[in-house]
Image 1 (cartoon, rainbow, N blue to C red):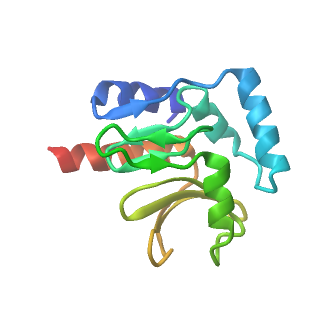
Image 2: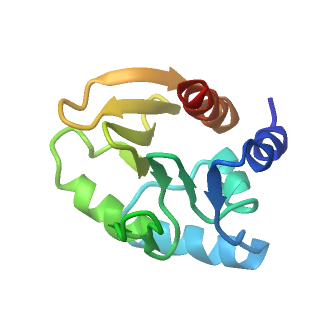
Length: 150
């Protein structure tokens, strides 16, 4: 499955808020800022996602943007990608994890050592699921939320 196919499904689902996509130039600059911030390099397929949407709100799931996201529903404020990851780096066990977003009960991340996208329990940090490609990871979240709304 390609990220473009998943993003098409996302647009049709009607329950996601996508954020203005990044230009190729902005993406190169952002990837450099991530790297110089002492964080891990952005995975290529996640960079591809950012070309479609610079962050995402999908029901209770928020994928961080380069800027803070404020929820329209309850005025929740979600920190940007860099600051969120700097905060998580202080959490035990997150040294080799690049946090992409959070849900009410989950952390959505990329495990740098294993080169896998993972869903972790937000409290215990236990692995709930894992995926080899970001497209499959995102498709799973879309399906889960769609099914819970049916």
